[in-house]
Image (tube, rainbow, N blue to C red):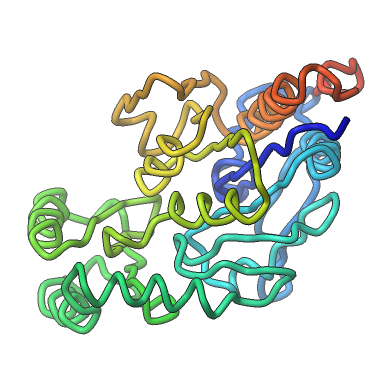
Length: 290
């Protein structure tokens, strides 16, 4: 009898993979976990996960339909070299692009762009507003992601909180949402969601159970749409003390939170498949970070 299909949709940055600044290695140096570099940008290492997490992700890729689910553009996503089987599906640009075997699905893109045209203010209007109101004192870059949304790279310590709140109200009235993640401030159309793309992958794969994880406000819809979800002890959702009935708030922060999330995914897959999955989730070599 075939095991039920479980779909695991996970955010990447600060959920499964971490920059050096986000690792949160608070333990003594001699007890720090060994790290695997999973992204290189401009010839420099950029993102990491623990070696233990790499083993867990490899196992997860064999046991479930693992779908990387990110706000990154396709180009930014393709810099990442995750361990384990290459995912058949990936969700990029906050749900605007659905990759199938690495190739964007044109039908999905047409559905998304049609909804954006019908339901929210055009991208040009938002770009113009940001250009007019952003202060060069704290603005470092303004970028457009695949003609779908816009983000600013800012000097976080100089960014006025009042300006962010005013922008959020302005965007809300035009069908957009604002999210501040580290040094990046995102303005994203409300219909552009990770959850919609996850549902489409679940439909195509016939998944009977969906699991998800994420750390930012842009992940909230994904967590709410999944049957079960997890958020780490850091990030926008943790700072806002965001909670939902089927979403577990973990205490771990930094790169060790990624490890914990993968263990929870594997437990969820095992339970969803009736306990038939033989997993190394509790193997001593995978749980010891020393």
